[in-house]
Length: 518
Image 1 (cartoon, helix red, strand yellow):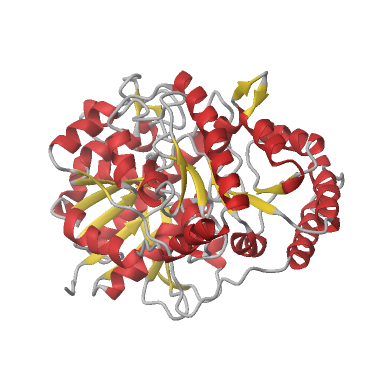
Image 2: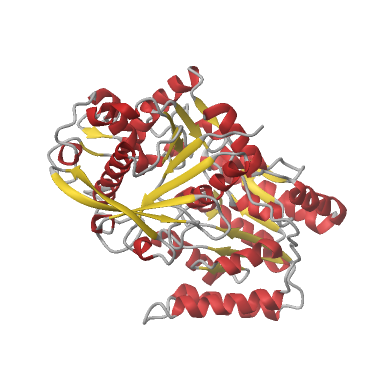
């Protein structure tokens, strides 16, 4: 069925624009609008310039307009940019305050001032979007679709600002991508506070404040309470976040917002829809040679090393381990992980399971000379140090401490088993990319991983009632996968084929958008 809805997506990231992606939000904002257009919709996507997007070749200045923010007048420039071959209209809002600490999507603040810089930046951005809608600089949509806390200030303004009352009839959707990041700031008494940004705004404090800290604004909570529909990026994650988190047990749920989410679910307003994945027509996922992978690793290591005057130990160790791997007569079994190095992705691997050894150490010892574990990613410096030390001790572990899109695409085609033992995973894209290339995955049965990987059907899955059970079961299922690979090629090959045949398309995802949340 064709649709003619006009949709405005409001987000902090968009991978359709260069350098405007940090995480999975960027993938969604790149792909979902294109799929919606194929269903007959019109889609505008708006995001801040971060300075550099205002200089994007092909971006056209359309207009400028004034926005009152923090008692001051800001002159906002509005540009349009259309990606070649795409019908998505990208709207870029520019002001120097969108690049307050250099030209980057997100800024880092000290622990005693979390989100301070970004909260001010995105509050101004949302004020600029609201004003753009009011004066017609941004075309009035049928649906405003806000993504994560960065866009939630717009929902607050639409609800409570008298000057935007004419926009109240627009249907609103709020998508949760990362519930752990809530953008909490003081309501008043700080340069980066709600009263400082919107001193004249009359609002219902109970609807926008933090559940625990009543003197703070929580844009994530406000988005959940104020949007017409709340959307998460997988059905299982929508269920999980209605229950409290138990951090000591390794169980991640509602992050303090489970009560609000449960109420929205009871009213039928919390909807889990799995993100999609692109399946290019005619794409072939031929396994590259080990030599090619080695050359690409070498290229990536040189590039990363050149970014500093000192050679990082991680790069030196990785170069040694790669040489040893290439010198082997046969590659053997190759296990792979690609993604950000974070507690979410690494906690289970770090958990001790027997004789004081971590799950990672037990797996590497079990793998022995029969295979290699390649991990590509960067992130938390303490975790990077942990994996670097593990690679120094275990010659079958290559830790590539950086990121290369070209290398990752080839590794997806090369690996025999993709390991993704996330403690929580709202959706996940890496497992879909690995499966697309015919690589079965070993995952924790949480969130989108549970919705995409079925144990012994198209991959391997473990679970547990606490972090220790999860770590032990990870080791056990890894043994099962390795034994199957080594002793039953026919069944393992059938798993690879089933993984490659699995489809999680954006076409199906956006059809569900149109039926259930728009």
